[in-house]
Structure formats: C-alpha cells, structure tokens
Image (tube, rainbow, N blue to C red; front, top):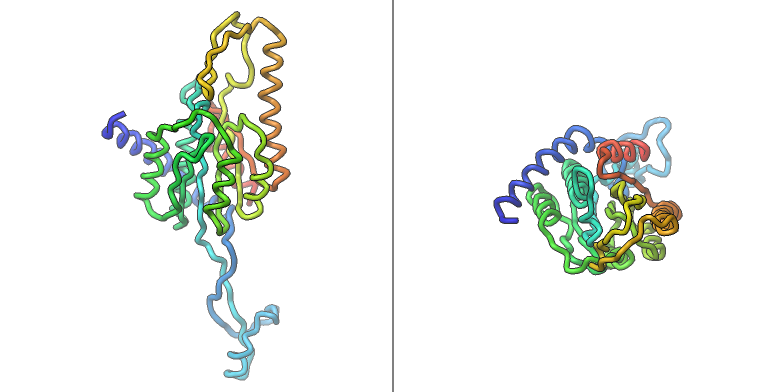
Length: 288
C-alpha cells in the first residue's frame, strides 16, 4: 500500500470513528473511567453537613471561623491500546477482516480519550512486542496510531498474550485504562493478567468471525493455519473433527471470559458482522 493510499484510509477511518467518539462515546467514556485520585482545589467556609476531617485548621485559625479544603477528581487519564496483530487477525469472511474492525474500535476509543484530553499509547504484539508508542496527547498522535494500525506488518504470525501483558506491566508504572484487543484464541495468560489488573483498569475486547466458531461439512479441504503458516488436509465430513474443533474454540472463549472475570477485568465480544458501536456503548453504560 503506497503512502497516498494509506493516508486516504487513515482519513476515512478518522471521519467515521471521530464522528462516533464525538457524538456517542466521549460522554460515556468520560463518566465510565474515573480519575486516579483527588487533588486540592480551594478552601471555602464550612457549611452544615461538611466532613469535619476536611477542615483546614490553619485557615480556620487565621480567620477565626471554620474553613474546609475542597478537592476535585483528577480527570486526566492514560489510555493504552494493546492490539494483537498476529496472523489470525487477518481472517474474515463477511464484509471486513478482523483487523479492520480492530482498527476502527481502537480509533474510536482513541478519539474518545482525546475528547477528555487524555494521553493515548499503543502496543502492537504477536508472540513478541512488535511496536510500542508511549502515551501522548493530541490529534496528530492519534492519527499516527491509526496509521500504524493500518500499515504495520508483524514480524511474527503467532500470539503470546502473556508476553504482551508482562511488557505492559514493565513500561507503565502509573494506573492506566487498558484495552486489550484480540481474538483471544490462546490460553495461559492468567498470571500476567492478574498482575496487570491490580494496577490498571483492564478491558478485553474479543473480535471474532462467525466462521471461526465451527467447521462446516464441506468434504476434504486444505486449511491454512494463519499463525504457523502450515497447510493441513482436513476431513470436514468427520463429525469428530468438527466436534474437536468446536470444543477447542469454546474452551478458548470460556477461558477468556472466566479469567478476565476472575481478575476483575471487563470483557466485550464483537463479531465482525455485528455493530461494535452497540457493544461499546452497552459496556460503558453498564459500567456507569
């Protein structure tokens, strides 16, 4: 894809997702995620019902009448987008690839954060860390993130969520809002998710295609494993083959839901032919 084509695609995604974030998500995002703490704002005269623990004794002594400290919530936050760009994200049978939807979701979230004047960072991963862009503010920064989501080519086609979460914990020391976007067709990330969830507000967004849920009976076919590059001859007429695959798929989905819930992290699941807008909005409102 040449530069002109990339810029055209970036602009198209910006127009679509910015409109969504401006009119739909910015308010929901603002109220869904709380600030890191309270900062001192001012002092005012004591009013009936105020907490006596908030009395500023120095000011009270100076004016010979009670004054209280007023605090307000810190609203500036940091959002980190963790995006799986392994081989399986290039799969799609309907109107778009999983990666296309992932890019739109990430862009919508990024613009929502920008509306709140928050910092946004990006972590692209496979079974290794492919790219890390430190959190920063501004529209030009968000456009750079969208461009990377569109054009970045991963060195590896495999997936390792545990490695990505471990890296996150090493580079982000302060609390952040973390959106981990993947198809979650792997396991063994409970330990690192537990560590990350204790420090950060983590949400897993599972993007999937309906054709991944089961294998149809279409005879003996060659199937490509997008993550290993291996082509396998599969007898889809075999009921056992179809059942084994569905079992494997369901186990991964259940693991995703159970482990995220166990670690106190949120989850969203969106099929590529569904409205991710409805899913995100429903999630934000449920948090509120």
